Every structure is written in structure tokens, then in C-alpha cells.
Length: 346
Image (cartoon, rainbow, N blue to C red; front, side, top):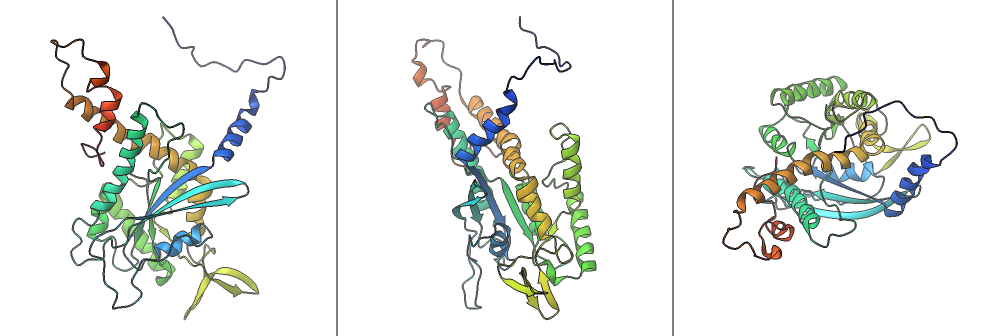
């Protein structure tokens, strides 16, 4: 019988061993392989989704899918459009996959407009699981699972709209959701504070759990404090701009309005800088990890349980049936996972 050794005090070393270089070894391999980050943007046309993404990653990555003229035809359904880019910063290569959802919330009757979004997210989980269960599995499975969903809230109105509540309830069950108030420069500082307060009250009332999570079993004390400080900022009131304006002789990202100049990276004007720091500088890796450990693991467990329950016990009359033909074999199990899965994910 093997028993686990209980945690104990660190045993002193008599000399240098060298295992402290393991972090450098991991970093070297990670840098060579690069990193994958998949972000989805969800919101009505005209909220500046494309502009914000381009501003966040300091590069023109996606074009606006909105209507530029009154005569432009309104999309009748929510579409899914994914674009991929490889960006590099100080030797770190990031494969960035951006999933846009043009047409979402733009119809007179928006019933079911969220279904293509939910299906896409689940389909990526299904694709990943099928690759995991394949007999000859890839050494490095290409990850298309959505790590973060930026949900855009319109600055007009009293608070969240009914469609926001319906969709957020569904999204938080399958993906990390980060809400942002789009084009927040249309509000005064006082209006913005009141608007955020009303939104947070509704989120609490409907028990909508946003990212980052308050999980004391997963996060240490320092991480919990950081997450708590981020949650106090939700939803981020943001402004995006790819243009530079000159302020006091210095070129900065922003735009000029009738009321003055909006500086994107000035926290007195908006919370863009907090959103960017959060997404790229403090929580990028955690977004990827929690997708795998929380959302995907829940999906995976549900799928495998459904497969197990759908497989009837092998008949005693045919005990010599080949293992490869057994419905409980990994290959058969993998083939039983359809796009979107046999049962809904959590």
C-alpha cells in the first residue's frame, strides 16, 4: 500500500543542485511554442467592438462590421466571424483569435439571437474533446476554445436590457465573461457611476457570476485580493480609438469632441487602461487556465457521463467481441461527441 507523505518543512540542501532553473526551462519552451488566446466580442452594432479590440492590442486586427449608412441592410441573424493574427512583443509570440458576432441584438425581434454564439462556444469544446479522445492524439492540440467573452453593454438606457440578462445568464455558464460599458464618454462621471451601480445591482439580483471568480479553493490570498479589486471595477467603462491626437505637445490615443479631447489611456476619462492591464498584464494566463479547468472540464465531464449512460452493457453472450468494436472504447466514444454535444454544457 502506498501512502502519501504529509507536507513537511523544507529539507535543507548541502549544496547547489540546479532545479531552480526549471522556471527558465519552462519559459524557454513556452516562448518557443508561443501562446494562444481566443477572445469573443458580443454586443449590438455600433458599440465600437472592433475599435476596442484594435485599441487593446495596439494594432488594426479587425474591421467594423456595422452599418455605415442608413441604407445598409440589417443582418437578419447573428453571424460568427473569426479572424486570426500572430502578434509579437519583446520576443513573446501570441496567436490571437478574435471571434466577432455581427448581427447580434440588431433585429426587432431578438429572440434566440444568442443561440449561434452559445453553439459556437460549445462546438469549440466539442472539437477539443474529440481531439483528446482520438487514439493517435496530436502532441499539441490546437486550442480554439473561447478564453474570454467581452460583453458590450449599451451606455443608453437605465440599466441592463432584458436581452442582456438572458444572454449573460447563458454565457457565464460556459465561458469567462467580462462586461464593458461601450462608448462611456457619452456619460458624465456621475452618470457613469450611477449606471455601473444599477448594473451591478441587477447582476447580483440575477446571480450572474462574472470573471474573475471568487474561488478561495483555487486562488491564493494575493490572487483573491487582486480579483476583488478587479470586480470593484466591473463593468469597465471604456472608450476606444485608433487615432492619435496631440495634447500638450504629446501624441496620445484619443479623439476630439465638442466638449474637449477624450484621452483613451487617461483613467480620469475612462477605464480602458484598467481593462487592458487586466486582460493582458495580470489575468491573461488565468483566463486560459480557468477556461480549461472550469468551463471545459464541466463540459467534458457532462459529455463523458452522457456517453457512458448511452452505452448499453456488453451482452454476456458475446464476451469475445473485439475491443476495437466495443462501444465503450475511446474511439467509439469520440465519435459519439457531436458538434455541440449530446447534452448541454453546464
